[in-house]
Image (cartoon, rainbow, N blue to C red; front, side):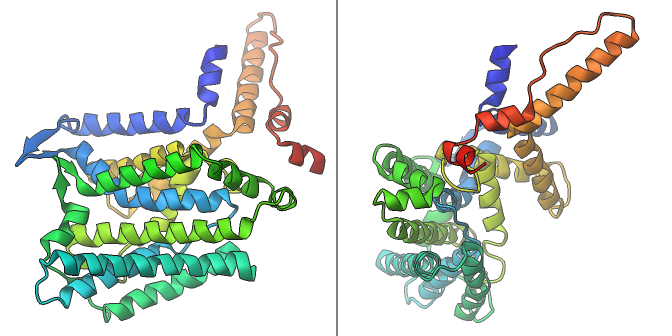
Amino acid sequence: MTSFRALTAHRLFWPLALLVLLLLIAAVNDPGFFAVRIQGGHLYGSLIDIIRLSAPLGLVAIGMTLVIALRGIDLSVGAVVAIGGAVACTQIAGLVDQGSVGGVLSAVGLALGLSLVAGLWNGVLVAAVGIQPIIATLVLMVAGRGIAQMITDGQIVTVSSDPYHLIGGGYVLGLPFSSIVAGLSIGLVALLVRRSALGVLIESVGGNPEASRLAGIKSRGMIIGAYAFCGLCAGAAGLMISSNISGADGNNAGLWIELDAIFAVVIGGTSLVGGRFYLGGTVVGVLVIQTMTQVVLSLGLPSETTLVVKAVVVTAVCLLQSPAYRAAVRARFLRRREVVAAANGGPATTAEVPDPSASSAASATPAEVQKS
């Protein structure tokens, strides 16, 4: 029993359990859900589709994880996704030869450069000017969507470029190219933050900015860099989304992706108040979000219900991950069992009931204990 409690207390237990449950529901609804076939030298199947479609959200969520770890938030990633796709498709549509690799690379470089500038803009507003992150990024969230529509003149810009289509819809060695790029990017970030002092510095600044400042850590540059990286990730996601459909829609591209990214980060166990962050948990959260979307569509439910399902699922997972909530539920269950035993004439057991407040105090940081 104790080992089971320890297992359920792990931050990834409930997200992984939810992911397995969603996969089982999909398999019951579609017996061929787990089937993977090779067609034209490429891997096809529902699982491959989930991995391929998770790539853009995975990039955005990894950037969002670092921003949230530094006590920030970025609501503008959806607009930056639209800007990245709009710039690239507009540039490619103006080429004489849309199949030119050099022309496509220059368009991609320009889109990523502008996305990086957008992230830097957010970082400067937050770290240098001192504007609250939610306000600073909300400005670009609104203005960026308008910029994307101005770039496309309010139209859907379509392209016919095989090199560009490779980014979001192509395959390399039988695997989706976008998934390979996302996987390598996530692996590189994980290696950088976990095999160097960067991850410790990020958690230090996010956990206690004042103590970090007194220790000589220059938090301003780290915050600006995190927002810049988040913008770059959003721009890369915009390239994947627009290349997959061979077109840019400044109005709908990346719509609500900022909420999906935040959901993925929260499901993965990273706290919104900053400090400790978990890249592996974020990846699991991304897979949960994408699998949930796939299951809702496979069940024949209206696509509009996806948002409601996401809200319910995220709430449930967050509650199950809370030690205080689990302790309160366990205490209520034990009390009810004692009442039933007493009513049936049996001896009333006095099982030890964990105190939610004690659980919270045990998990509190020294700074929080000192403050209380």
